[in-house]
Length: 218
Image 1 (tube, one colour):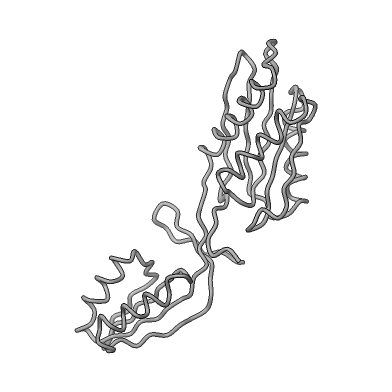
Image 2: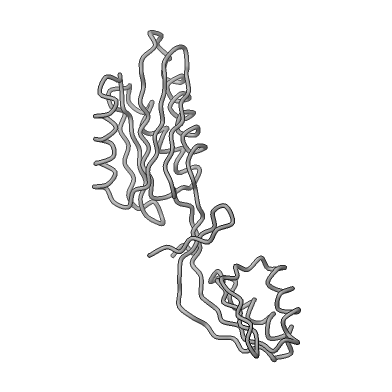
């Protein structure tokens, strides 16, 4: 099971122009094939007068479900190149529709591949992508003499601190990626000469966007 992977957190839109043909890429997070199909239908309705509404989507931690459509463009010139961009960027749980308004000039096979690929990249640039981490919650309790060393270790390891509670002792509530848990546990025990009490909590998925922690239901 993947312990971390990137998802589309918030969709966006990007537009490019190639030889007077307009390519509008719209992205949206999806968790099922039904959601993806519904989104594609929505875009086809919105851009009903377009020449083509090509699409691609990938769903699952390991890209278990992928689909793409050329929507009337020559085979393998639109949908597949669009999907290849999503897989190449390794972003999960998203659908992209690229709408084309024909500008009067044929682009040829290579030109179409580059145009649709470029549109998807532009759409992703205008979207919010978040890396999800599988983590354990960790509670660390210490006397005040251990605070400085613990804070130093957490800063060095770039560990997410959800809360710090100061009473007669100090308690840190942490989110620790699963693959780093044992190493951090060892560092904290050694760094405080066994003076800190550590408690392993629930498994959770989280991400960070604009320095804000996002908790996910998984």
